[in-house]
Image 1 (tube, one colour):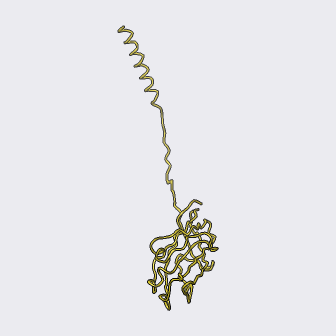
Image 2 (cartoon, one colour):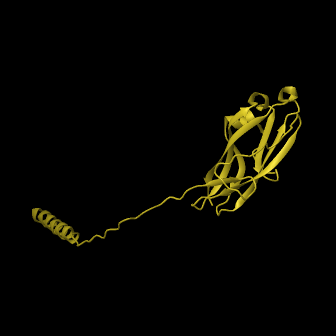
Length: 182
C-alpha cells in the first residue's frame, strides 16, 4: 500500500514539474505611446437677424415700446451651434438681471421662448419665474453650424393697471446649450 501511495505521489510530482516548466514560455512587449484623446468644444451664438452673430449681443433699441395692459408681441431671433464636437445643443433660457422698472413689470410680464412659430417652447412664465431658474425652451440646435430660428413671445397681463405707466424695463438673459446626442 505504501508503494502504491508512493507511486501515485511520484506521478503527481512528475506531472507538477512538467506542467510548471511548460508554463515558462518566452514573451515580448511592444510599447504604444502618445495615445491621445482631444475633447471638442460646445458653442452657441445668437443673432437678431440671422447675419450678425455673437456670443454676447446687446439690443440697440427697445424690443417693444408703448406697451399697455393686455399688450402682446413677439420677436424672432436665431441661434447657431458652433460646437467643434458633433453634438446637438438643447437650449434653456434664464433671466439674469433687470434694470429700471423691475418691481412694476416682474409679475405682470409673461414670456414664452421656443420655436418662431409659437408651437413648441417653454410655456409662459412671469419675469420673476424666469429669474428664479432656467427654463427649457424645448429647442435643440443641431450640429453643423446652421442657424435655427427661435421666438420670444410676451404679453403684459391685463391686470397690470397704471403701475406700468411711463415705466420701462431692460433685461439680460442667458441662453445655455446643453449637449444632446447628435
